[in-house]
Image 1 (cartoon, rainbow, N blue to C red):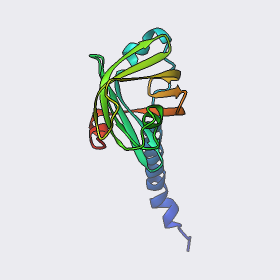
Image 2 (spheres, helix red, strand yellow):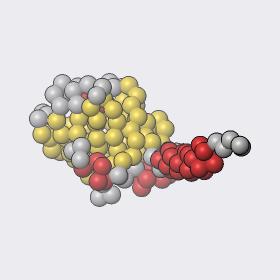
Image 3 (cartoon, rainbow, N blue to C red):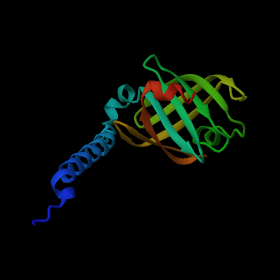
Amino acid sequence: MKRVNISKKYYTPWLRTIFVIVFGLCLTTCANINLTPVSEAEYSTKIVGCWQGTVGDSKETMSINRDGTFVCQIHSTGFFATTLSQSLPGRISGTWKITGSIITMNITGSKNEHVENKIASSVIMAFKTDELTLKSDHAGTSSFLRVTLHWFNSYR
């Protein structure tokens, strides 16, 4: 009597298929982050969107709008709170502009913060399509990843 290994005959193609599907999904997820460098001339147009950085266990988020306005959700130890020398978490809003590699944010509104009519500037150290690295004199360097609007709104 010839012995037949059932696992090789019936399960191997399914296991391979499942592995290929899972591996493909992992590659697709990783490929969603576009790390193409952005030229300085394109900073003002390519920066528009929603960005998120990590502060301890919290997410620090900012929405940079095409009309020159922004909204940031800040945390007490986050990049923006440190840049503005604030100790309370809250939300700031205002206008932004980029000159060369400097982004300047003119804060005209705030919630839980007392920073209205204050200006904060940071140097864009690195800018790739989906990754932004900013440096300020007070906060040091911090990286932000581009996020989709739906996902961003769930953390606002």
